[in-house]
Amino acid sequence: MAEVKILAEGYAVKIKRGWIASSTCTLIKDGKTKIVADPGANKKLLISRLKKEKLKPSDINYIFLTHYHLDHILQASLFAKAKILDGSTIYEDDKEFEYSGEIPGTSISVMKTPGHADEHCSLVVKTEKGKVVVAGDNFWWTRGEKQTLDVNREDIFANNMEKLKESRKKILNIADYIIPGHGKMLKVR
Image (cartoon, rainbow, N blue to C red):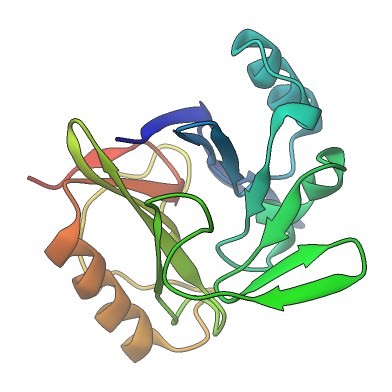
C-alpha cells in the first residue's frame, strides 16, 4: 500500500491586486517510488518540509501536475532529476512519452477530472486508511472559508462548470479522503 503525506497545505488569499496562493503539495511513497504532486509556488516552505521528511529534491522520482496553473507548478524545476508527469505524458528533459492509467511502477491511478482546467487530472492512491484522491483544484477554498464538498460550489477560475461538477461527483463516488488544491484534507466517508 502507498503512503500519502501532505508536505504543505495549500492556501489562497485574495488581495487587492490579485492573489497570494500556493497549492497543496503532497508526498506519495509507493514502494521505492517517491512522487511529489503539485509542488506549488512557495519554495522556502517546500524545501523546509522536504528536509523535515529527510528528503532532498534529488530523492524524488516523479513530479505529478494536476494542471498547469502556476500556483501548482512553479517549483517543479527544483526537482531536476525527477520525471514530470501530467495526466497522459511523462516528460524527461526534452523527451515525451505517453502513458495511461497508472503512474509507471506504482499502483497509483490517474483519473481525468476536467472542469477547473481542461487538462486537469487527479491521483487515486490506495492506502491502509482507504482511497485518497489528490484532487487538485476540483476542490479548493480561500483561507478561512468553510470547507464543504458541495459539487455545485462556484469556481471563479473554472473553464467549464458543468464538467467540474461531473468531475467532483466522480471523485466523491470513489474517495475516502480528498486532498484539495488549497485547504485541509477532508474525510468523505
